[in-house]
Figure 1 (spheres, rainbow, N blue to C red):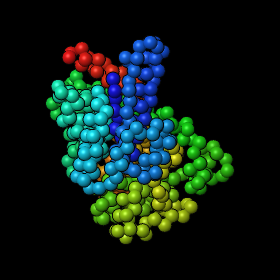
Figure 2 (figure 1 turned 135 degrees about the horizontal axis):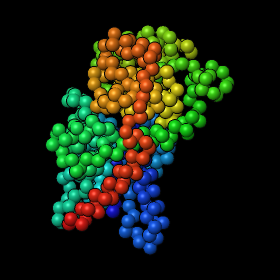
Figure 3 (figure 1 turned 90 degrees about the horizontal axis):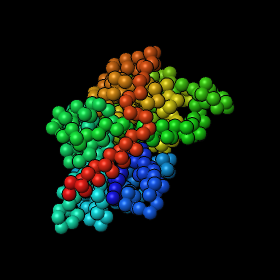
Figure 4 (figure 1 turned 180 degrees about the vertical axis):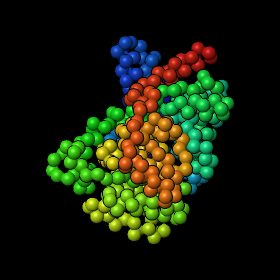
Length: 400
């Protein structure tokens, strides 16, 4: 069997790494049990579309996560949604026809995900019209906000997929409500949490806290870390609208008067700050204010997130990671596709009004929410996924 995994953007890398390692573990087990029979070995092809292509958003993550170099790099780069999606489809079709994988694995909700699922769903790899099985990891999440490009990508990808691997129980309800056959749905856990649990000890060795002056002394113990907040913003609905961006920053002014806030900013977000004339919000001292940072590597960011007094974000993945770490999180969106981070985790959905953000920040800092680990967020999701793919492929061969 040949499995092709497709990554394209920063969130994909954390979700894909455990699956790559689980394939390796599967092959090691087959080789040990049946050294003279290679029929159970999975041939693996890693494709990087190049949707995120610079060192900070791509290259350093491969290094931090221990991912191998991609077998194929499409080098698509940036563009509008239509241009980027179309270019990924055009280039990916050539790769599929050359490699002829049995299974294509896609992750999450970025343009690379829906583009490659579309191509795989329509391609004929042989004269009989056979196409690869499509496996969607992180299926079933719904914000019920059709204005989000990610929501469109999720829904389309789920309805094209043969195997839908979900991270939380809400995914089962969402998919069944949309008429997807229950036998396609597999509740396996969260591969992003697999990466976090595998990396958190290594992240402790990062020098990022010292680099940003967040230790109160040369003592490296946790008790000597200054209290600080961490901020990420990247969604077009927040950073591409001047009024909304301004509301969020003004909603954080009270927090910024007491805490240093480290803002790891996407390149597009930096562009909007200059375009909207918002530079006045980023005059940080060593004790308080918002400090604008370039994008960080995975281990550096994980270290900062683990030790933060509070994380403010519009990222879905960070809602999950803070839940796992037990770190208070304020989400500056009107909704979330990850409700388990609210019901079981440490997340509050604040919206984007100044007053609601201030109120949520005060609540999180004064009364820390108690997190319960969501079901199957145990670091073993990728192993379950590979086992399910192997079973499904074997059954398909029997049925044929």
